[in-house]
Length: 341
Image (tube, rainbow, N blue to C red):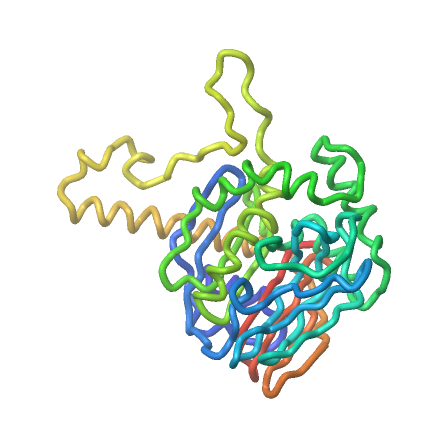
């Protein structure tokens, strides 16, 4: 099975990722990221510059606005906001916002108890819920109750050796310096509009954006928080006394063909031989990624349409080992956020 054939098996039913291509895998500690490039779809508002959290109405109730003059905004699945002078919230679902439209989400999750109020732009930054919380959050879409995710957050904190409290900022804010290292050690590629994520060699998620600008604005939220938290937890224990300082993320040496077979770049028989060795290594890595994808036990999935905007369809994907949401135009995938359960 080729890597792209395996990738297609993650997209349910007759939906297509035609034209999407895998790039060279990158690894930082337990987290592997495979860039995806493909056909860009214009007319979509990027999430950081165009989408704003305008008001926390009350616990579990927030308002988001598409401030662009033109273009529809696809609200990223499980986006959340950290801000001053208002309680932190995350959404359980995606949605469409037309240009200039404001939508109130009554099924949001409070992830830190605080005081609500109006917000200014400088007071907020956004994240995506950690992988360990995403299945529970998706199952709670449409369910009102501001504290509905606190038990899962408390359990996640406990697994990380933190106080068992329903406060997600214990990880996102207090461990932010460690988590943001993934952003600097995994490089966003020109033209990249998606990525495959693996944690310790196991499929963790597939993210597809309409265009490279949208994905670039999602990059930090995805690599540091949605998947970085799980990868950080999968890291080995810090070294003992006398070892090199531990900075929170183990480094994997780049596994080029010349290092596997005892050579170095300077010992290759010319530039052509070096390029051939690198091509062989890239091919071997992609084959490995294909094997990882083939081993992903996705099982049967159900596709349920949730919302429409013109020709766009927002649907929820649920299965025993895979879940998420996807936006399509006909049989073409425009946006996808699918994760392992």
